[in-house]
Amino acid sequence: MVVAERELRDLWLAGRGLPLLLAYTLLLSATSYLVAANQALNFLEQREAVSLTLQVAVAVGALLVLLGAADSVSGERERGTLESLLLSPAPRRALIIGKGSAALSLWAAAWAVSVPYVWYLGRGVGVVGVAVASSLVVGSLLAVFLSGYGLLISTIASSNRLSLSVSLFALLALYAPTQMPTAVQNSWIGELLLRVDPFTAGLRYLGKLVINGHSPGQDAGWLIGPVVAAAIAAAVALLVADRLTLHGGDQA
Image 1: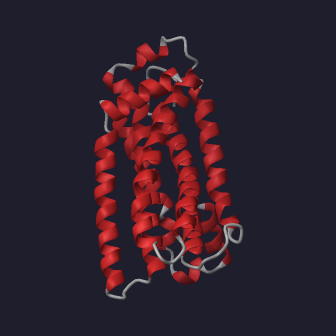
Image 2 (image 1 turned 90 degrees about the vertical axis):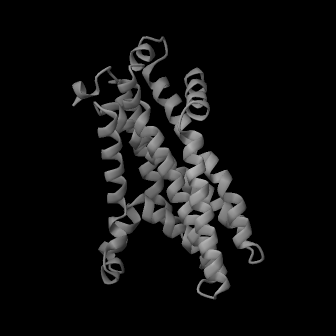
């Protein structure tokens, strides 16, 4: 709790929390304006407008968590403040959990910001409650996954630049299955890849709930990928925390 409190204070009072949230709000405002304009021109059905905004909110909100987690340990190395943390009596897993909690606060703030936009676009079609609740579940799973992954890379990486580069490259790789031809996506191997990819699976689940009007349990199989990815990433990050050193490159 002490580490989490310190990290939250540094992130939101003296760090990049507020600038990142402001940029997120501007992006969400622009997206909502565009989908609302297309909806008025009959280019988008209202459920599709809500789904598109929701997917942008979840994807970018989770990206904020990755940026915060990837900077958490490697950033301390570059600023020369990691040594004082390692000399503290707190277990190293407690340090990682505290830093992960601070990174997850970015997603909590992003989700809270997205609620008014979803309400405005979805009012009158009865999807606001489902959209808000499902985005919280899916976004939280993706946030835990990216937090664990970012902390893992940040713990191992010897520099902050390397940590951010590797983390963002892996995130881009997660979108690769969506670029496959439609015929491949509709095949069994294509659907398997889409379900394994936590980002694609989570966003597909949101689309089926909001656009198709499915019940939460009807397509719950799409959540297996995000749940497994979140559990594995968090567990591996905690295991690697025991090997946290002043110079991350020494662990490679």
